[in-house]
Length: 278
Length: 259
Image 1 (spheres, rainbow over the protein chains, first blue to last red):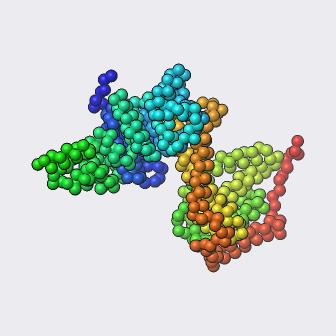
Image 2: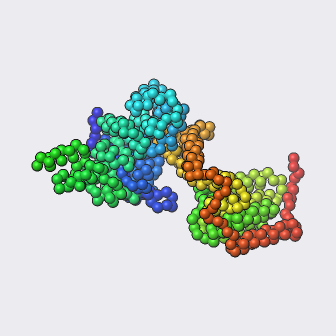
Image 3: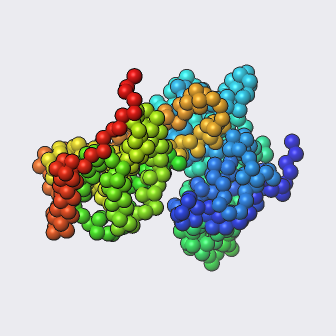
């Protein structure tokens, strides 16, 4: 498979959005996201993150400006049509789980998109095994734990194989092992050439998994850059009310002997060893 | 659209004379409006009564919200009007059916004014003062409190299911009803869960520890409230006088007997 680089699949052109007569939530967002990019969206509560991602499948249409998905203006396309390309996993799984079994839940979207039965069963099996949910396939989703319900919600989107995958806070309620699993899945999806956008507050998770980061603050894109440049720029983080991750923070305390843009534990180790040997 | 009507019954935080009135005084106002609108079924008194609610809306600085509640009840009003107009076997059906439609609007308007200007907590306090058991008063105010939450949650659920390809706009009536299952089930389950959580959270803050409760804010009936109540009672008395003593009456003018 050939991954076309530098082909923008998501374009925001001066997007403003407000609910009827209230204060605008998005204030002139400009974005170009290329195919196959893996991007984290960070930002304080109320920065407009969830509002932003709801524009990706046309659930919300901009009150001013345009959003293009694969070159198509969301204003002229139905949510169902866009959803086939853009899969959004919502923050709270309880807002979507309704079926009697996990299997039915995961095949809901596939049935809506009229996939044939044999393909549905194949897809469901593949995705449930991938997310460690195969043993629960005949169980009611409501009897599962919070973290498992979250994974069922993720599975119900991944099952129909959208080419842009958006997740709102996927790490909430997941233990370390499941977070690792999620990282693996993100990597796997990246290899498959998917465009991945994840909204999160988990800055260490961003550090480990996302090459690029968008910082949203008060409805504006404050920064859109390599994660390394963003997470080591403390001024920027302070402005967006974010706490720097541990390693860059430590590096700033050792700024006389360690270079400033250290992001990972192993980089820190190398830098410190080099400093000690000197 | 359907959720807009909620706006007209939601407490707004303006600080006006009406907001400052004791809920009990405003309850008396509602009772007055109810009495007056039920004893009269003629066009002019109804019109006067309906128009009399408008200055209160302006005083409460809630014209926009009030308009939403009026707009929201439009379909019901239209139905009242049409049904009465065509089914009443009277010659003056037009004036009668319009006064019945106006009666509905007047009552909606009065309740809208009440709920827009009464802080739910104060309403509960008023109910308790009127000897309603605390549990019931609390249940009532909590129900009011959760209407906007539920409305918001419904929207989120609709968004989540539409993101999974659920079509709500197309198809026949039966198909569309069926498609609401994926929305209703999460809504119900979340409501039950939330109810249980709230109960636990309340019990862990010692709810039900003793039957004797003390209140941080006490309601007191001020001079304003007295005057307002007196005005309401006097106007109701006037209405009763006109109706029953002076015998103001515009009875059905039967055009044809019932079949």
